[in-house]
Image 1 (cartoon, rainbow, N blue to C red):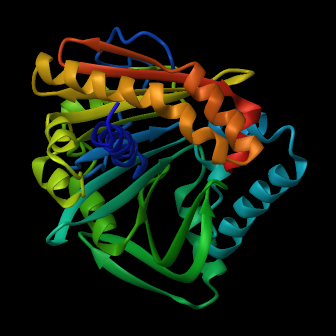
Image 2: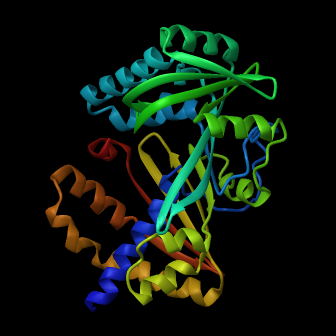
Image 3: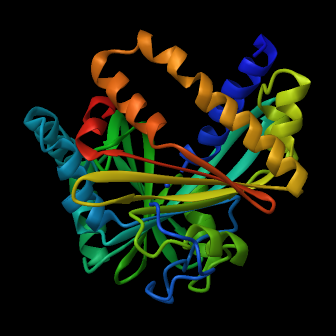
Length: 336
């Protein structure tokens, strides 16, 4: 296998993962909607290029404890990170039932893509009480502004923080708005304004909602469009990888968990059956070559990567390429 194909395979795999991570469960895809979701699930979500639905309660009470059960120090640190987020913002993620994230792509310069993201958090909490707690936690380092009759609280953080005890983010100013008694919008000021403008009906595209909610048992479900402008802004390398990457129109999938395992489903929807077959060949080539890179990894990460590679299944269905794998939950502690 030549070096050109090797480089193309590796680059394409990273593109597929990168598109979804700005935001995969192994059950069979049979339905375009999730009847178990409340009808207001996507309320206030602005028009988005990508959306993700996170079952926060399950993530914090089931998935994360299973992953970190064998590493008490990391579990303690994850809880400490949640407490830090609450202390600095007044917002306790443990009070959320679910969070819907909407992301838009912007292109401020050639070959540069910026993600504009807003989170809509829902739960049985009192949203106004949480907003009041945020004011108290800010200790004067906040301001308020009015938009369409709503009050946006802008808290100055200027710190590196882990959201939900997992995602490490640099936060400068955090805008929070009470949308209704049990819903909050969280993000930048501009993106919180967009959530207010979207209103109770929301503006999320029906096709993205459908693909992001196909697995009713998922801890995380996601779906994203892949416009040509996005691919142009990425360094996809040679003609082979560019052709495969530019055939992708949407990506979607889910992350699921059981008592012992965490599973990933990632689907790339292309513009033709021929393109899907070509993409399958490229990803299959990566799977075959994956073992070459394991030797350089630390033992814990090597075990995780080997398990994911051993369980990797690649299937083509019409214009879609479906990638599935699963790993032992405990093995994921090495990357958290």
